[in-house]
Length: 228
Image 1 (tube, rainbow, N blue to C red):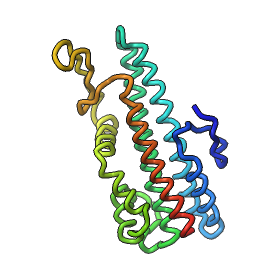
Image 2 (cartoon, rainbow, N blue to C red):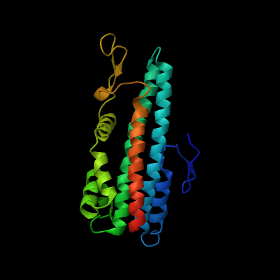
Image 3 (cartoon, rainbow, N blue to C red):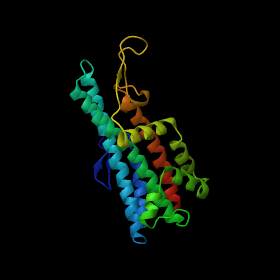
Image 4 (cartoon, rainbow, N blue to C red):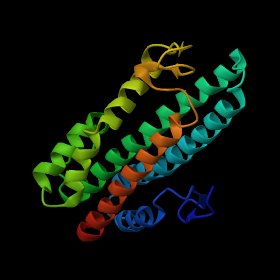
């Protein structure tokens, strides 16, 4: 874990979290606090959530990987439980970090073009989702980098998989595990959607999340500095 700190939260963050653009965005939208307190509160809540959820996701990644390393020789039910607990938390909090970002950038856009980004009532808040945010940026700010990145992220196979796994875990089942002895998959353990259970299960997906969150926050910082 890194010692880099988010100053607005006094929160130590892992070294793969993009603190610099995060801080720029926070500084920019905070200038609108007095002119629209409600909108500022939603922005602040969303941005806090981005950091908190990513940090939680990181901790689930580390704990899961440690559990797998300890249970490779003789996986027990207790060890499997620990892995499933961390997998649940990992997929939930990782996606929540992205959800909070899309919500937060929608709120920031509402500071610029309120008619195009309605953000005044509880009903408005509930309507905000990935696709709606991306599409509204395409129509209102199509020349900005953030517009393309918002759309690109949600169309990646990694995002689609992450979203599907999250929905399965929250709304449906505890996935079965399939253990293979012999053949091409000898000694492999497969989880939902053919995901391999090993020391790379969460770490590779965390790298994807960190990279895309960095792209989103970097482009959002440029957008926010330009318009707010």
